[in-house]
Length: 126
Image 1 (tube, helix red, strand yellow):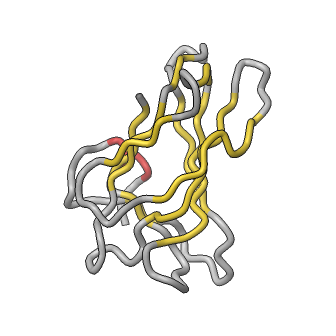
Image 2: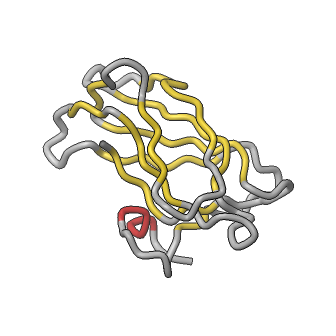
């Protein structure tokens, strides 16, 4: 297993894998939009996964949540599904995006059924 910071790396030889859960409901990771705590406009999320058959733990179904300066987490800004592609996949938020302090990605299902952990090569905001 590699540290959470590997999500920000473009490398394909490392990837983040969540902690094993006997009853997997969802897993989430949260990214800050800036180092100064001020909100930034986020138009979408990019995600890279290893496609099947190499990535049974790859994140498949997920949603995007955002937290603004009010400190409230706004759930389900976008619900999406990854494809079995090796390149970075882009998922645009509705409208012109959101002003967010943090962005949370919640994974609900993986590429192969009945998995107890999820994995992601890379995450990026745009």
